[in-house]
Image (cartoon, rainbow, N blue to C red; front, side, top):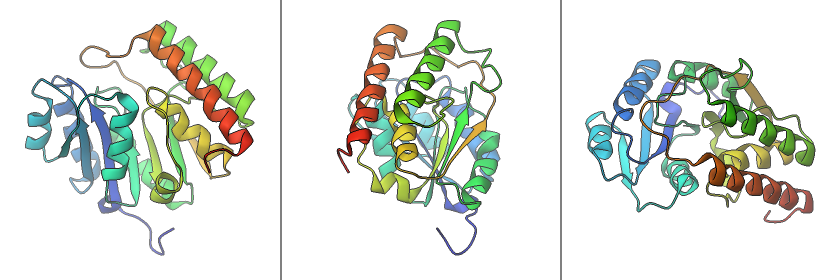
Length: 232
């Protein structure tokens, strides 16, 4: 942990993007407003629309990558970031970027991971099937992982760089769950912070059935590996 409190200039906000031309501009504007334009923004992009051009015009660092899936994009974005506090988000307009300073303050209080809990307030804008699935994922991860986890697939979290760089991340569609489960099972200090969740801008890219199955398999795999001490 730094000897001084981290400020907004120590923050990198990172995301993967795939054909989010409708949403990425407003999201980057919200990040800029929340951080006074001081945060580094890293977008790993696989789009074939105007998403990367819009992101560059808004001042983001855009890393081009062939389509490899959600986890591959977010993982690379986390590693491309240069600041000690790394905040993940999605570029679909669902997450409250105005909470970035709050997440930073919690990192300064000593938390290693601050995880945005969409389900705390009910996530009324989330499709009912997704809401049920996310509650089942959280229950499964809590039982298998031995920690009470509320929302394991949220896309908005803050991490101290030590967490990102000390763990070998392996999942793709299930990376969001892995990014919470492994730190929790390894004893890092976790804060699950309630957040509001808005309706997405543009069309979703994740099929709820195949994507849900992949996330479920990832949760099982990660919990078993951590129980057995594999991959450390």
